[in-house]
Image (cartoon, rainbow, N blue to C red; front, side, top):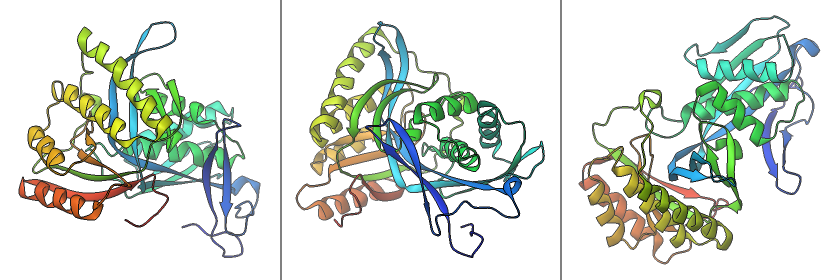
Amino acid sequence: MPESDDGGLAFATPFFTPDADRWDWIVAGDGKSVRDDGPSFRRGFGTAIGHHGELLQGVFEDETGRLHRGLVTLPLARLTSRATFKLTGALALTAFPESKTKAGLAARLTLDHLDIADGGTLCIESDIPVGHGYGSSTADVVASIRAVAAAHNAQLQPSRIGQLAVAAERASDAIAFDGHAVLFAQREGIVLEDFGGTLPPLLLVGFKPDGVQPIDTLQLAPARYDRLEIQQFRVLRALIARAVRYQDPDCLGLAATASARISQRHLPKQHFERVLEIAEEAGACGVQVAHSGSLLGILFDRTGRDLRHRAGRVAASAERSGFRDVEIHQINDDGAKW
């Protein structure tokens, strides 16, 4: 982690203020601006979380009845991408590692949005796996946008960050909103519906099929949903809204499972029916998938009884069924033990 001038740690972290509909920044450590030799060498820091695919993805109507592709992301706060942007006084913008081309483009687009001609140096560190639906590239992009904005003492709303993210990578998810649940048009960068809160607390047992290769989302053709599926999406959207409003994990699981079934017709997951069986046997809330990745997950009510035993059974069943990288994640639990 970068150090401030007096050796203390300093890291800028965003938090959402619903009433003001804005993002603010907390600087931990000495609370001072982070500088080297002067204003031209100021640094900004940004973070963004990963995700475990989607709870819902499909085609949805806006207030005028026009159809848009949209999704509801399942955030994973334990996976993060961290960006540092350092003003160098040069016009060039350099990104490290060099493979982070989308993050570099996002940084340049952010500078353009702020009407700043100068460049700088962007460094990305991430613990998010690449290519399976964890949202690694979007997290890099969002962290980079936040770092550039912080370096210039700018505060960007999540809606603006989402638009810049889509411009940088053609399609993005709703990670700019962190845990705030929204229906996000991933190819347009607009919010189709703000559900007005966070997802209910959940326990997720996630995994992927053995031998599956990373998926290049840019090479995937968008799913072509039929009329019946579009009608189903109306219902599933309403279920998500109810789940957030009443903090109902069972309602959320019902919507996620139905969306996963629809996704199975467009990007099939290996052994999907076995995953449904495991979830039913364990009394889980439902099943979710990465609609453009290889991940599958089984959802539990975080407040449910005998949770540790049931989650352990699911993890063991998944491993016996040939799945790998079996992990247990806590969602929106505020760090409570389980």
